[in-house]
Image 1 (cartoon, rainbow, N blue to C red):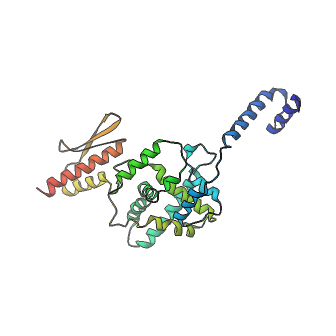
Image 2 (image 1 turned 90 degrees about the horizontal axis):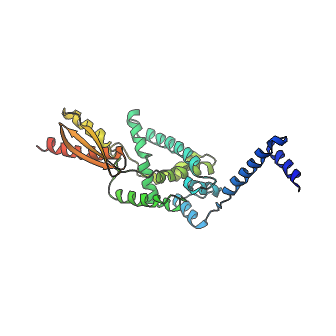
Image 3 (image 1 turned 120 degrees about the horizontal axis):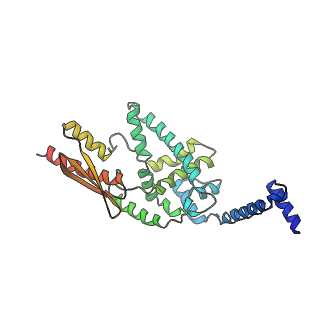
Length: 283
């Protein structure tokens, strides 16, 4: 093929005509080739680890590509990742949980059902499930900090619920939501199949009696009930950590620090509540 024939082919591919577009067509073609090269990274499934996920779920995929997609983090630089499946999985599990709680607790009002649903589909709960079943070990990612985040999270949840006191690695929760989305799509959008596969992983569900109140909310409600002054918070920053002091009646009654302001404030509120309770419940 000579230069003119190659040039004509470029124009035909880009639906362009005329000599003024030659540079644009060549640049576009190079970009196109470059893009194809980037996406040529192998995305074949390793049968051993992915079979393990199917065993955990008790579900065999008819389209294995969906399972592969569900376990591919955006940082892996693959052509596809779990973002879209996470999106649909989040919507599906919220609907199924709303239905489950609505039928299980006919006596509860909407304002009681909403926090109950939130607790049962929270990032913390989903991340815990991913750790419990070691789903994270099947995830493809390129972010080296994930390994440390996983270990820190595992250490903190070994005894109690985090209750907003530590930062939840969102990607751990994303894994479960993307798998929910993958099963939903693989089963021809069968809500019954998703419920059968995932509700057993979510057991035991958090009921009204197990629902934990946010530390700041619990502190505020306690002070209001006892007719006590409102607790205020001041903030400092040291060595890339947020430091929050809880101020009650002009005294520091609790302090907390963390990687972000919310976590530090929750820790301060929890400490303040414990100290105030000691004073007013055990005089």
